[in-house]
Image 1 (cartoon, rainbow, N blue to C red):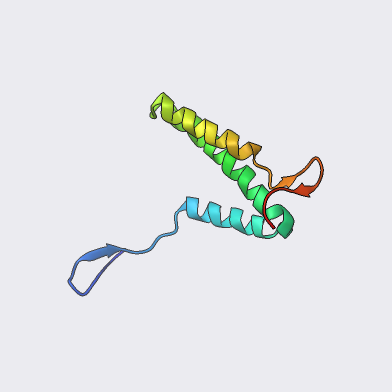
Image 2: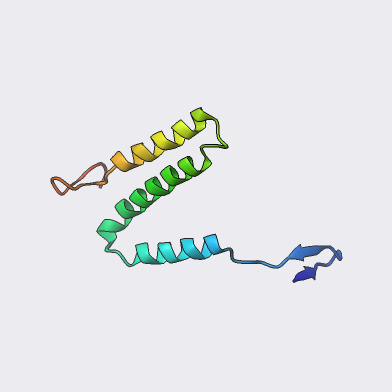
Length: 93
């Protein structure tokens, strides 16, 4: 349904897309993880989504763009804020 504003123009009502609902549910699930695991899990999920998107869009993107997305996903997959082999935190505080 559309509602008019003061000028009489119509503006679309706010809608929540299925993508927004899915993202909200994912964020809720991430929030339920222990704080020490949340960031790394979010990075792993982001890497998987970027890689998925790159392959899904490969036919419409330039090969260079697809390659950049795949490289970005690979870089994120390599990033591990917790060195799982030793359990030692990498980087800052």
